Length: 245
Image 1 (cartoon, rainbow, N blue to C red):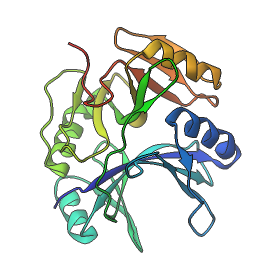
Image 2 (image 1 turned 30 degrees about the vertical axis):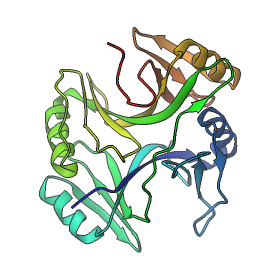
Image 3 (image 1 turned 120 degrees about the vertical axis):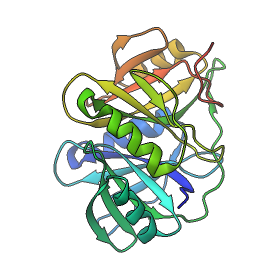
Image 4 (image 1 turned 90 degrees about the horizontal axis):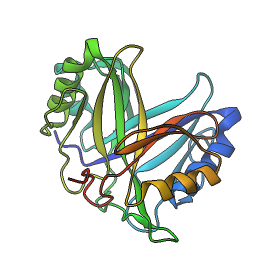
């Protein structure tokens, strides 16, 4: 089994879909593809170079959130492997297998369609460079060790050391990092992170688009988009994904 590509899906309730897509398209520096799906519920945020790794979806119920699509060659074999290392099969439809991790995080297996080229970071006025390049899975402490083991076994990728944060060490062609964060309580969920050369300038730009600052930390700022969805702007290198030393 080999994961050939990763996509982060931003899932929005119907009454938030239009405005939220406009916000995320703007901060990603992307265009929006024509809608797809039987209800025109899917679209890609198209980068100016490279293959898309961000998609949006309108959901009929619930608050939405973030989930991952894993693009693979053999859906059946990958689903069996996922179940053998602890995933729960939720549903199977044409070209889509929905699973749940041991900690309860929902993700999808979809066919790989030849994506190979990571998009380059966007250069903004003022010389800030940034890219949405990470999905952070927020895992309650009770499930953290099992969840880290699961994602390592599922992907076959090594994982970094750490007590509160660990990231999977992705192959060079994969466009998204997967970070696992230990949280003290609550239910498992996820948010996206940006890497930026000038985080404060990035924060200011997002605020102009309607986002709000939630909390400042040494290497990242927690933001809320115009509907309150959390995400982070980090000081990681937009090209390598690594924090400054």
